[in-house]
Length: 151
Image (cartoon, rainbow, N blue to C red):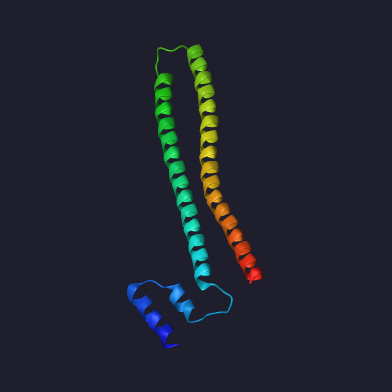
């Protein structure tokens, strides 16, 4: 028990908690503590990677939304300038309005599609990391069970 408090003291001094040292004091027959710790470390690494991919996906989405908003403001400003020109006839203004509306609708749909694809890509990448780790964990459990049966 004194070793556990020594380990806890060392962990408190360096700011990290070493599970393997603590678990070494609590040996359970038939359990490979190092393998369990290694598996959990891989789980944490996979979650960290999936989280990083999700954050990068959100950042890409926000960047693209900002670009789309900036472009829309510039286009609206240009359109407004065209409408306030006194040289245009009412028919020309109506024709321009119809054309601007058509272009705006097409761009809006294209932008929505693009943003959806960005979200889908980020979600798929993060999910694939987690899915791969779950598969690896199941393989590890299967292999451990086979070793236990072989003994």
